[in-house]
Length: 307
Picture 1 (spheres, rainbow, N blue to C red):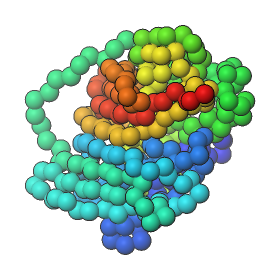
Picture 2: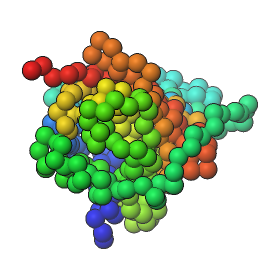
Picture 3: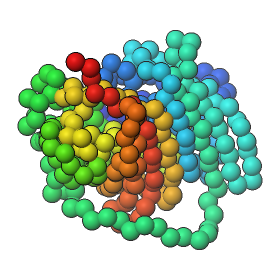
Picture 4: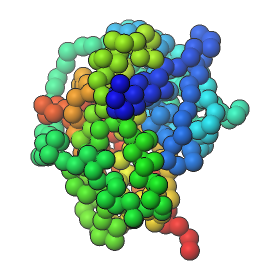
């Protein structure tokens, strides 16, 4: 088994929550590149917990979440699901993630049966073929000297090993001091063979349907780069460089059309505003065929460190 496949299996195991009561689940955490649980992990696990209490023919169509406290990567997280509503077409769930007796994350998610209706979408913006762009293993070591320590590059590569994520333009840490338009694009897909991992009985394969798993994996990735466009507008490199400190505050996603997390997806991101120590990021996720699959909005704390 190669390293990419092993990393993918580790991520799928992370989404394999243990059911400890009918609507109570426990998820493991793992070390992150910052001294707290990665927000995308908590959001994805919470959506898995909600989805496991919903009929399989109702995929999620939206989620709204708040990050309340930093998560401890050395401790498990308990997810309690409230069955708010089970309607004829829509199902609503509320999830609270708890560590050390305190809530660290709150999520509301809505699920819908498949139906036909009016349809239109924004066109997909132009972007180069992802296979022509440098991989993380190619670009991160080139800029290791800009980071707080050279080891940060290795930690980033390890933390994101399950995801093949490629920047269309240079990431913020590569152009510190250069003010750019507050827009960013990345292509991403899972690293490794997702079908093989599930066929081989990966951790979550017997508890999560494939449509729900694809959405949860995209939720996991959605928190990785969404605030980059804020940094670009101010010539900042990010936490890894040490010229800002920040954290996600809230996160909302709308799932419009089916997608596969192991196919290339374009994450088109922008920031319309930053103020008062906070910044807003907006994103659209398109399939390689040009279908608008997901819309994302997140607000985060973005502060310049005090000297």
